[in-house]
Image 1 (cartoon, rainbow, N blue to C red):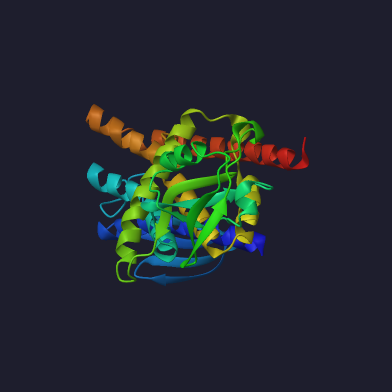
Image 2: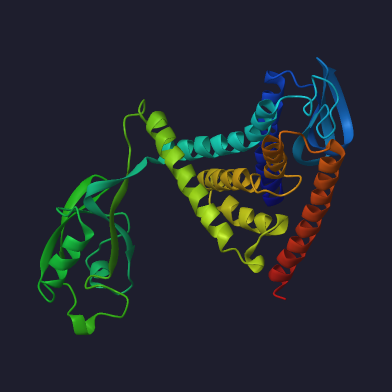
Amino acid sequence: MAILSFLIILSVLILVHELGHFLMAKRYGIKVEEFGFGYPPRFFGVKKRGTIYSLNFLPFGGFVRLKGEDLAAGKNSFAGKPKRVRLLVLLAGVVMNFLLGVVLFAAIYTRLGIPEKVDYLVVTAVAKDSPAEAAGIKVDDKIIGFDNSQKFIDYINDRRGLTLSLTIVDKSVKREVAVVPRPAEDTPQGQGALGIAITNVDTVLYPLWQRPFRGMWFGLKEAVSWGREILTSLAKINAKDVAGPVGIYEISKDVTKQGFLAILQFMAILSINLSILNLLPLPALDGGRLIFIGIEAVMKKRVKPELEQAVHLAGIALLIGLMILVTINDVRRLLGA
């Protein structure tokens, strides 16, 4: 089940990326020679309007093969199109991955609600053998009458040793709870007087007709936030922390156990990650191809197609080598070496 989920997740992300290239190429009259599901050898293919739609034996992702992708081959080839068109075709895959991340985040927040600041406090953790546990306070209980965590903490600290009454809401049922905050000398390190963790952010369930729109807007902000986080992480990356297919598979196994929404979140984050990684200025990646368009714009003439093709082939070899090294590192990490 885990390996199937892993293959489906990565295949969907790659196919969505390639679909972006496919649709934009079709939009500008570039001949798409093949749109493949999985990787060769080919199992079977159907030709329709000049494009072969193939199903291949390796069930992992897919690919789009454009006419003249590296070497100019007529007006309906990729290489024969103006810079603007080639730029749009290359960016389409990245945009599709980013949009997929937005849609997946939107679906999650449409289902769960929108995280927002509220006028009450939510209990996120209860320490064992704490005054809160003794009083029957539980995770997800809502403490009414306080809209700010610091105000609540100050209120409790000023009344250590006294019996207090807190208004608690649990699944729409309101109750009064008597609790005695611990004196400072009896408070374990790292805990507060009551032994709880709190937040003034909760998931708000708006009317059903509003949720998709609010979910899409919040999903966009979440995608941008993750994109910023990934870019920041790339600047500080350590080779030992890089995960390849084996590492991602291990993560996907844990995510699969947490349910469908966790899988959607994992896919959304991976999709945003894929969109950013594809923009890196490395040969064979979309970002590397964009560099050549930039050089062409600056020099007012095109780099020799044969040279560009050779650079991308070298880039593919380099990426495969790096993937092998990362995979070896993943296996060693799993074996505790």
